[in-house]
Image (cartoon, rainbow over all chains, first blue to last red):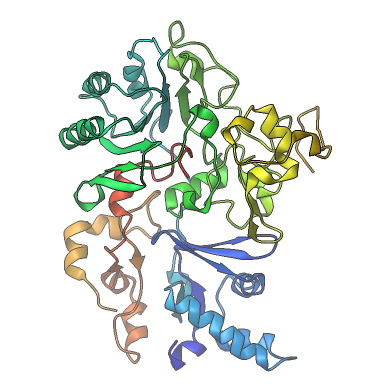
Length: 388
Length: 81
């Protein structure tokens, strides 16, 4: 900070937003896709006067009783200034806020298609997905991937509005890998290929300037049960995701899925089906009154998440819940505690053992040593009401 | 900070820049109304609204620019840790 800045009004950069958690706060730079954890005291300083304040005023106000505070406050503001999160000006009214409304020009924004060896339905649904205005498709192969089948599917999308296709498949051999890379080079719609159960975590091929890549990962994936992890790796700090999270569910909103049996669902991991693709169109399923049941459940309504500082940059999961009977329960696979600010392994949490058994996930956790008998009784909410 | 007016002119039409509020889902750059002048004439330079827009700085180094264009901008599923 320059000396002159101390006497000027200080406001947050319009692209920076604050999220208050139970024990600390988060400041997100929505245009640089970055975030910074800050103490709640600094959050209060930044929000107490929306018309702006001078750093001098703030530091004097907070250091009346303790002179040491002045130094600390200055270091806080210096840190924010270095991250370009502050603006010093005599005209704070010139800095207009970013529009925080979210919308999408289509009924559906993303679709997940699960495929395994028993999947027999025709691929005509791809045209239906395009007709719903969906530009992003994820194909998840839970059996051996046939490159010729994949080619046929992609050929169907040649003249569609589909912008990007992500492919998840099991790593079989280097021959399949080379075939996929060749296919990706010819088809710019394929933006990402992830091969799981691979011998190493490595980027095998990357297009120039970030337009997609082929990655192998050692992760062992066992169908849709492997989905729903909440991790800081999935935090997204962009305007689109942030604004969507404010009013909608960050995972399920505008999503449609077809599971390995052809059942049309909001998410393939969910139990409720809205018909089978063999006899129901995607439009019919989408028009079902319950299809959009989860679309507007925001993190502000979810137990524990509502106190989390990451709630608007984290993608939710309503398929696997800590309390399966409460649709407003915390995601099962989240190990973050916003009250202690610590990340823990979710699968070893005693409170989650009943849900792990409920969803049949225990086999997925071979390293887990605690017996289900040791699980303490859990709270239940038979009416499925919001947890208090 | 230097103002990269050349880059701004090549990417953005004056119509876009006249909007006081950024468009929804505006992803490709950062708009700054940062001063590029010296301390003495800074206030004069932003006193005029038109002048202020000429001082817009585009941060084209936004690294996720291409990723956002190529994907949904968020994970479609959370299957790989």
